[in-house]
Length: 497
Image 1 (cartoon, rainbow, N blue to C red):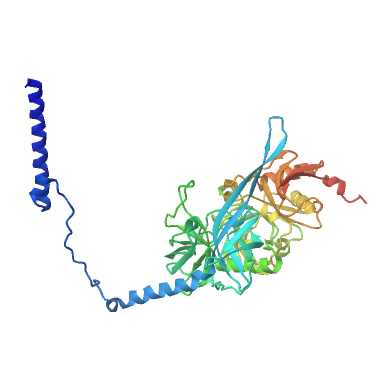
Image 2 (cartoon, rainbow, N blue to C red; image 1 turned 60 degrees about the horizontal axis):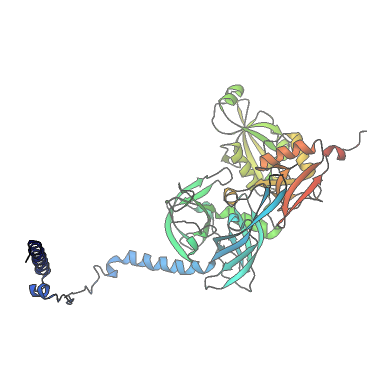
């Protein structure tokens, strides 16, 4: 036997011995016979076990929690049948230009998902406007799993509310819109919806705060720690009686690309939703109020120049002739401190309060004038022009806008994230010069082939153009790109006398 072979056999013997010792040690530690390791018979042997048959506590010992548990379940059973899942589909269109400047449309199918709540026996559903924005197919799935098409009755873009009608025979089981003015910080609420497409999800929390603002447009919201996630938008926030106290609209998430619940959600108070719903069902649209005043924010320079010593309010720099503001006695240089008994924090906030005030209502104004505090009374009329949406324009500009009768809005962040660009026509005055060529819901992409970024950009380009020349508007209507022409304003001026 050679020395190499002897070394190999020695190493093999050492390895086998080590393996046997380790296996025996493992068997001894696990309580199995050592012979199992030596024979290789390591079949599983059943373990002895005893499960507990008794709960740590009896329900009788936890009477309050037991009743609360049953009541939560009862509330859920009463609310969930009125909450629906909303699936949408549409076509996203964008105007593109080739290297030679020729325009062409690019189309892409889009899909969306959200929640809603039935509020009438006839099958009207309240949801968020951003859930159905730009979508031409809307499908509603009820509690039992049945799906029906739905039609859009009207929308309130400022409040982010839309009203749908289920295309199916009723009656339906609606939830009551509660009184959001009675909501208190700390009270228990439940958020119901379809997060991430998961149907009939209920989360519980409290009202964390009131009168929260997440943008210049969305103000005075409820903040809640009830879990709200993508897909919950449009679902109800309900109290312990199952009444709707809010419509879930947004969440706070530092990760914009992958939004998720961070313990901070927002809901639109039910009283504002009720007013919007009523107007949409009666008139097909939300009527926004108009006061007729142009405001400037309070800053240190303004305070020094007029001798004003507060940090809030809105400085009146212009009053539209014949407007409710003029009739109330407002003057240039006044500072509006309160509108309808609510403090004015900024011009944008006051404009939003005016727009949400029911038309015809008499509201008090608290005004600072030359060091004195005055109380005035004014009424709010219907806003037929874009002036309240574009307060930075002067009186000449406002007259031109009213003359043509076009009201537009910028795309929301949600719409812009889908690739939409331009502005949306929200209203066309039938008496205006643009009534024959512009329609509501047209998307205006460009003025004289210059792309439009937002509402302010549109008004600036539009007014500068129509004041002196014929103006071309490139727009999308019913998924088609068309170009229309408006005559200059001078052509329609009344003859001199």
